[in-house]
Image (tube, rainbow, N blue to C red; front, side, top):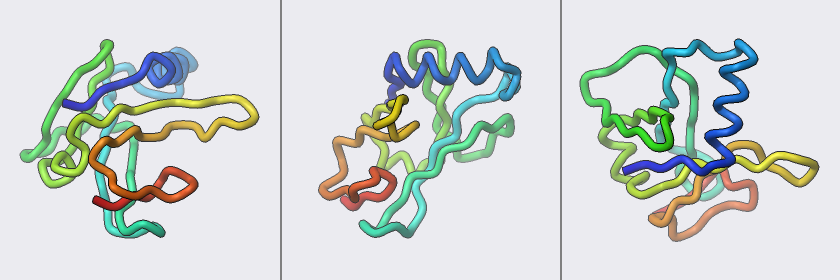
Length: 108
């Protein structure tokens, strides 16, 4: 399962209400090679389903990931932190053994 925090849900709803995101789009999360810790998160809004998609819904937000990425993302929560010290969207990943300072890279 993948989860969405209340703060991330509020920001996604805000983006949708501003008309920046199509109402039928979902969050696509994936893991790619790279970053200072070896693996990086990638997040986009998408509308296209793929054959190996794993689909989850939390707090009314649909999150989709490919099967390979899901192995790294199991039980991860999408977070959002705004304001002067905020980092935007981040991932709280219990599977990560090491993360970089920016929160965009991790290793398992």
